[in-house]
Structures are given as C-alpha cells and as structure tokens.
Length: 140
Image (cartoon, rainbow, N blue to C red; front, side, top):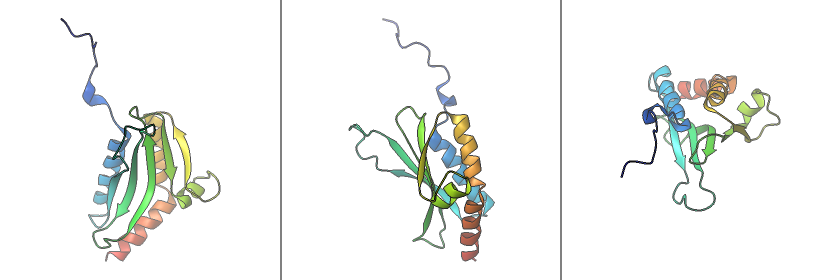
C-alpha cells in the first residue's frame, strides 16, 4: 500500500516560538560578552496528557556571577500548534509598552510575524535595557 499521508513539504522550515526565544537568548550572551546569558526554561511539562496540554517557556536573563538570581522577561504558552500563543510580559515592560497598569499581563499572539514584532519591542524596551545594564555592571 502507498502512503496516504500526503506531502508535508519541508519539515525543517518550521520555526517554533521556543526556537525564536533560544535565538534571542544566544544574542544576549554575544552582546554582553558572556557576562550575561539568556535562558529559555521549560515550565511544567511533566504531564501533557490532561486538558491543559500547553507548552510553556520563560525567557530569563541570568549571570554565572549571580547564580541565585534570574530576571524573567516573559513567558509564552501554546498548544501543540504554536499559534495562537499567549504571551505574558514582566510588569515594568508591560507598563512601558502602554498595555495598562503594572502587572504580568497576558495577551494573544496570532502568528509568527506578530510574535517577532512584539519580541523586538519587548527586548529593546528601556525596562529590559535597564535590567541588562544593572546586571552587567554587577558582574564586574
């Protein structure tokens, strides 16, 4: 019998939200000459068989010089199909971007291009730059 699966196209061309976060985490390491690094932490995926079968990831700033400290910039949560995803931003960043009162706010991202645009706004925000500068200078 022949395959009834059809053509999947180029399977390697699929870019996941986690891979976008991983890429930006690597850029932080380069930009800070290794004094700071970004890390994408996988959150709560022990049992994905229940009704809450979301994949959740946090983007954090860390330093080997401050091993007990981490700053969580954002987290994302999505089903097996990554879009739409829920994006949650740290309070000061949320406020700076004009999304409302300071708290961790969630909102929906419908596609990859929208996620990239939001990620650029978040990572280039003054709130993130201030955290990076403070942590960088604490590692001297």
